[in-house]
Length: 151
Length: 214
Image (cartoon, rainbow over all chains, first blue to last red; front, side):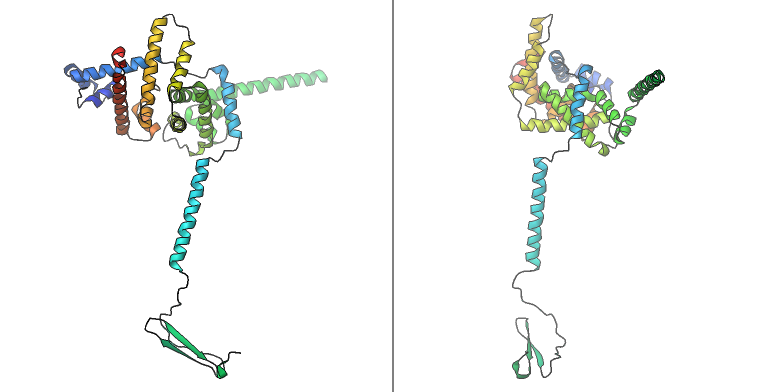
């Protein structure tokens, strides 16, 4: 099937939507490809019109039709499976993200780190407290009570 | 005393009937925007009037998608129920008809996905045609066959192209209305329609139907 770059314009003309119908008419007179395309569009439309029966809801059927709608409106809206599935998926994803964040921010067995110790002291009588920084960055706090006993 | 009461009730009944008549007339004369506003405010009779006005557009579109009268009937009712529940979301940016047809098209596409239409759908149309008497039976058979061939070809179109084609050829919507229903630009409407027509022509040509149409 041959084509012409103005077929879209011809189509708009066919649908009564052309911006410049006179130009399209002139073009159709000159262009055999577009003339054929236009006649095909008409043929399909005519074919549809010939075979078509526009169904309708006649006035006597209206009350029956409306009663079904009224019944449907009165019923509570059903939660669709798709909606429920989406909701469940969302909640599951939120829980997984929460757990992942928790494990990232608060990993288990993580050593307590003191970034800087300025002073250590104790109120126990006779007890001494001291601290020793290690090479691995951790700090040891040493508490010594009188008689090595905290009782 | 009893007679006086009967007369009073009779006049009350007349007054009620007259009020009812005036109310119906008011609804009948009201424009679309007013009816929508009343329906949004909870006036069921206003919504009923909207259903009365647009039932055939919704039903015809549903039928052209589904090719089955019973399903189209049920689907149309579902569309109006959905529309009633979503009335508050309607802001009047598009016409109420466009909004309804958008709901219908989307609902039908969902239905269509659930059960892929095949020859059964066309049989329904042939059955329907065969029930109506025609003074030219030969011609009717010809148009029935053509109709069946066209419907089969339409059913093979991708959903977006099929919607565009149906809105234009079966509903007679303008490009602007189609853009509102399909929620896309005018350019997209034209493009989808063009592709739909091209594919349709190719399918009909392959089956030798196009020559018969011409």
